[in-house]
Length: 261
Ligand SMILES: O=P(O)(O)OC[C@@H](O)[C@@H](O)c1c[nH]c2ccccc12
Image (cartoon, rainbow, N blue to C red; front, side):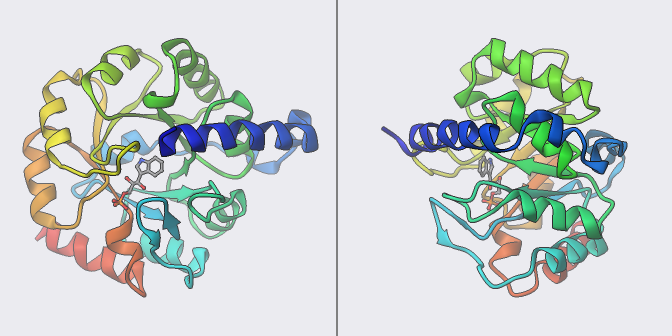
C-alpha cells in the first residue's frame, strides 16, 4: 500500500467514528452554517499575487515543519500579508492538524479558508462548513468521477468553493465538470512525494479556461510564480516555504512585496 492508500483507509475509520459521535443535525446547528462564504476563486481572479498560504505543522514527506506556532498568530499574519486565502490542514494523524485549527483561524480572520483534508464523504463537507471553511479540497486520486460530482454538488449547495486537485492527465480528464471552481495541479506526487513544477507546466494547456488554475506544492521562489503565471496559473498554494520559518506571516509579507514589485 502506498501512503495515500494508507491515509484513506485510516480516514474511512475516522469518518465512521466521527459520524457516530456527532450527528449531521448537530453540525447544522453551528452558527457558522448561516455565514456566507467569500469566494476564493473570485479573490484569486482579482488578485495581483494569487497566494494561498497554508498552515501545516508536519507532513508524511517532511515529518516536522513547525510544531511551535499558534494557528491564530499564523492566520493573522497571513491575512495582514494580503494573501487571497489560507489553507488549514485538518488531518491529525499524518499532518498534525484538526478542525479546531480551522475554527480558531476562522475566529480571527475574514479571508477565505480552505479545509485541507482527504475528503471521501459528504459528512466532511458539512463539518467543513460548520467549522468556518469557505472552500473544500477534493483530491481526484482518491475519488471516482461520480464521487467528485456528488461531493462538489453538496459543497456548492452550502455555498462553498471547490478546489479539485489533480496530478496527471488521467485524473484531470476524469474530473472536469461544471460544479468545480478551481483546478489545482499538485506538483507533489502524493504516492511517492516527488516534487516537480513541470507537472503544472505540462498540464496547464489541458485545463479549460473557465476554471481558475492553481499550482500547488514545492513553490519557494517569486521566480517560480512568475514562470507559472506564463502558463496561465492565477493561484499558488504555499505551505512549507512559509511554515518552516518562525514567522510565516512576515515571510509571506516579504514574499508578496517582492512578487508585486
Ligand atoms: O508545503 P508545500 O510544498 O508548499 O505544499 C503545500 C500544499 O500544496 C500541500 O500541503 C498539499 C497539496 N495537496 C495536498 C493534499 C493533501 C495534503 C497536503 C497537500
